[in-house]
Image: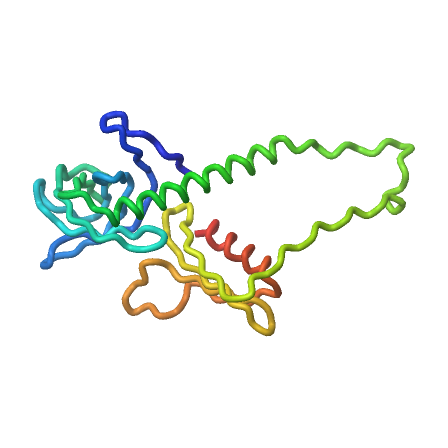
Length: 219
């Protein structure tokens, strides 16, 4: 997972992580991926681009919602064999971007901190020592006391998540008589696609959460 960085040229926090984006004019709209973003601008990779100094409309899909912006193309070109890059600068301050950006940066920092904490805990865990020859048989050792289970939510739970590949998903967990039903859809939804990316029924809430995490890791 990518950690936040500070752009030394402008002193603004920039995040190098992928977000879905649509951009263009009333006559032409294109799709692409934001690979570098700050409160003042962004870098986009896409099979299509607009000339330098073009003023375009940009829809950035953050994990929680989409933000509409107006931006000017400050450079265009380069990229790989199937995509080109564009640098965009916002034409005016945009409060909705500032709020969405701040929420997203907080989520990224929290995810990074949780990952580092899990890695540190795993590295610090002592290896299981071999029992000496005179040790009591395992059957005679007292069984460990199981940890109390956290109470399950009473109502439906909605989650917005982003996979390591930069895909955004919305998950709905609903309590049913036979367990918990998990439904996952990718954001933004594609026109003509009405079926969820995953539908599954789990025996309890913990199993549904586990299935959700495994789905996000696999995508």
